[in-house]
Image 1 (cartoon, rainbow, N blue to C red):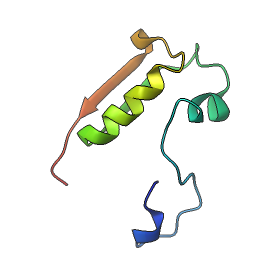
Image 2: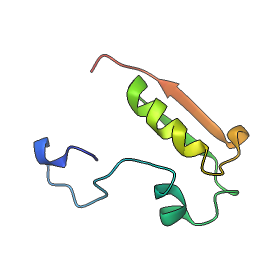
Image 3: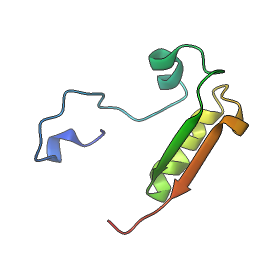
Image 4: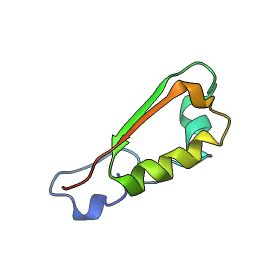
Length: 68
């Protein structure tokens, strides 16, 4: 969550963007997982940049949606 200060619910998890550094820090070996992500177009574009961090593009599925 990147805007936990505006949330009505308490958040103890990560408070940063998913970046090229984030994935290997949290997951280690990036060759095994299959990545699924969905959300607003700007978020999907940002996470897509993490694919350039060594994640095989064939192991990534994404979907953009907005309106919330």
